Amino acid sequence: MMRIYFALVALVFMVLSLGGCATTRHYKDALPHNLKVTSKIESVTAALDIYSVGQQCKITYLGTVDIDQDLLEIGIATGKASYLVVSFTNSSFWSSSSGFTHYDFSLLPRKAYRYLIDVSYIDNIYNVIVYEINQLSGEKREMEGKELQNCGS
Amino acid sequence: MKIALSSFIVLSIAVLTGCVTSHPQNAIEFRAAVPGAFLAKVEKYEVSQPFQKVASRFEKMAPKCLNVTIKTVSQSTTSYQVIVTEYKPTVIRSEDRAELHVQQHHAQGVMKITEEPEGGYYLMVVDAIKVDEGTTRIEYYGPSAGHESIIKAIKGWASGENVGCPDLTK
Image (cartoon, rainbow over all chains, first blue to last red; front, side, top):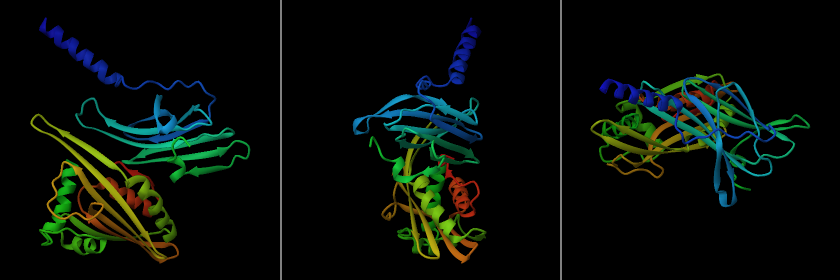
């Protein structure tokens, strides 16, 4: 009886551990695709958390997209700011240690533009580069600094 | 654990250079203290990169990557420790020289025993100096152990290879 109990406890623990934490939910990708995420990730798991930004920079969590493919496409709202968080998590089922690093920024997507987030994590070095691409001209430019820090503007 | 090691290294730079009661208060004092300090080193090398590119990467990547606060939680069966470390990068650029200063301030979990400069204790100073149109000399002053990811990232900014931010949890 005791053995069965421990086996059940171990099974529940494994299911919970392997299934991940229940505090995230998948992003409901219902808008026209205007955001590409390209990635090259080694030895960690990466994810993109998406928030809408309201008045006075109040953010509302919309969901998470796992960055588990080299190329992802999703849609985010145009004409209003989104707050995006790229996270890198290093954890192991067999190890007690874990690490969490993130890069966050806000983005004000415009109509007639597409966006590309290039994400990499190689050898404990990560990088997140955000590009804006004019759909008409094809012109691509890197966004940086203050234009990614503005909130709700 | 690594944060504790880094604190030990920073303290070693002061204690083993004979400055038990004071830490380097600026980059000049830090450069002078490092050569004789325990667990600290000076490393000089050249990269095949124009100075302008190296300096621009310092200016772009340092605030993007190192203006951060890291919270570390260490837990065992007998202890629980939370350390909050605030990093502060500063880049000073002139025509043929760029200096990157990295300071760290422990907001929680580490006791201060000496006067701390504004912005935190100096962790490392990296100078990029123009040699010729395609070559830049790098002079690194800082820890000889620990902080591998920061050192690797700064080497990447200098060389142009795998340019990115260090994962400071490593």
